[in-house]
Amino acid sequence: MTATNGARTPAQDTAGTDTAGGTDTAPGAGTRTAGRHDTVATVVRQWQAVHPELDTGPMEVIGRINRCAALLQQAEDAPLRRAELSRPEFDLLGALRRTGHELTPGELARETFSSGAAVTKRVKQLTERGLVERRGDTRDRRVAHLRLTDAGRDLVDGILPDQLAYETAVLSVLTPDGQGELAGLLAELLSRLEGHMGALRA
Amino acid sequence: MTATNGARTPAQDTAGTDTAGGTDTAPGAGTRTAGRHDTVATVVRQWQAVHPELDTGPMEVIGRINRCAALLQQAEDAPLRRAELSRPEFDLLGALRRTGHELTPGELARETFSSGAAVTKRVKQLTERGLVERRGDTRDRRVAHLRLTDAGRDLVDGILPDQLAYETAVLSVLTPDGQGELAGLLAELLSRLEGHMGALRA
DNA sequence: AACATGTGTTTTACTCGTAAAATTTCCCGG
DNA sequence: CCGGGAAATTTTACGAGTAAAACACATGTT
Image (tube, rainbow over all chains, first blue to last red; front, side, top):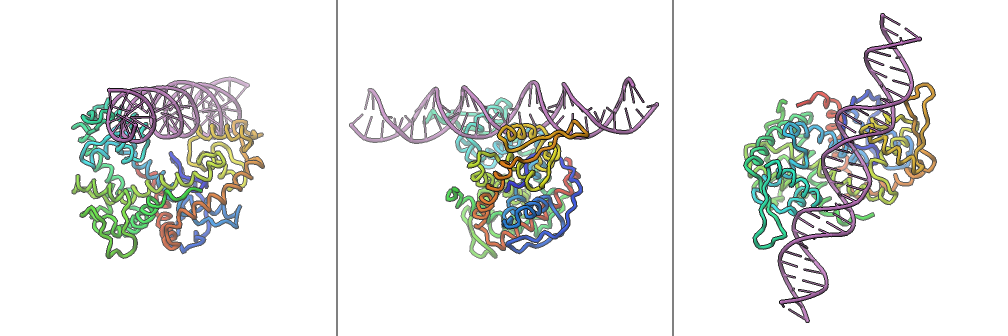
C-alpha cells in the first residue's frame, strides 16, 4: 500500500527519466533480482530517507501489486473498449458465460465482488443493450434469474481471445518460468488472504 | 502482439493451484506449498471448461494481481479510515511528505498517477482541512506550489507506522522469503511494464 | 508590440459506485 | 390465518473521478 504512492488509474505516464541510483535490495527479506528500477523502488527510497527507522518491506510487495494492477487494468481495457464495454460489465457477462447457467443478481454480485446495487445498474444497462435477459423465479418472486442472450454470448466469446492475447503479450516481458513462479506466489498469498481476511480488523 | 510465451498449457506451472481436472484440490505432491485454492483458480477452471482451446495462463497472473490488489486495498484502508482519509488523499499527502519539498499540482498528479482534475479536488479539500497549503509561483503565475502544513506532516507521520504495521501483519501469511521473491518478481514485471508500456496500443 | 501557440490548472457536465433506506416477498410461530 | 422477521433486490442521495472545455498566463515569432 502504501500510501505511498500508489497506483491509481490512468497512467499515461511519460515515465520520466528517473534517476535512480542504487540497488534495490530490500529490507527484511532477501530480494532477488533484476537491476531495473520501478517507480515503487523510488518511492520506497524516498520514504526511507525521511523515516529511516521504519521497515518499508511491505511497501515493496503491496505497492507493487497495486501499481501493477493499475497498469494492467489500463492495458486490459483496450480490447474491451472496442466493444464499448467497461471492465465491470465484462466481468458480469463473463461470470454468466463461464458458470454456464443462470445467476441471480445476488450471486452475480458475489461472483464479481461488487455490490448488489452496482449489479442492478449494470444489469439494467446490459439488458437494454440486449446482452442479458432476465426471468423471474416461479417459486420465489423476489429473485430474478439472469442469463446471456445469444448476442451476449457471442460478444463474450468474441472478446475473450483478444483479451487473453493482449494479456499474453503484456506478460511476455516475463519468462514463462517467471510467470509461473509469480502465479504460484500470488495464489498462495491470495488463498491465505481470502481465508484469513475476516480475522484482521485493526 | 506476439504471443511469445503462448505455449503455456495450464499444466503444472502454478504449483498445484490450477489443476484443471477435479473440482477438489489435489495438492499432495506440490513442490511448495499450500494446496488451498483461491477464487481465481476456480474462475480459470470454469473458463477452461467452456473454452478448452484457450490459453488461460495470463489469467492466473493478472487475475490474481487484480484480486490481491482489491483485497489489500480494503485491508489497507482500515488505518486510514481512522484518520478520515481516503487512500488517494493519503497518497497525495504522502507524496508531499516523502519528496520533502513543495510540488505543483501537475507534479502531484504525475507522482500519484492521477488526473489533474482529481488533484485539484483533493487539494481543495485537504486545504480546507488545514493539511495542505498553497503558494503561488512568483515567476509563473499559472502554477501553484503545495506543501504540507505542520498538521498535515504530523498526520502522515502518525499514520504511516500504523499503515506499515498493518501491511506487515497482512503479508505475514507469506514467509519472509516468499515476500522477497514476490517483491522481486513484481519489481521485474513492473519495471518492464513501466518501460514498455507506451509501446502497446491495441 | 501584437499574435498565435503551448502549458499549467481549474471548471463543467456527466458517469459510476456506494451506503442506507425502501420495497416486495417469503417463512415461521402462535 | 396473521404478524414479525429475514431475505433479495431496487431505489435514493450523494461523493468522487474523468474527459473535454475553459481559463489564465507565458513564450516565441515576426
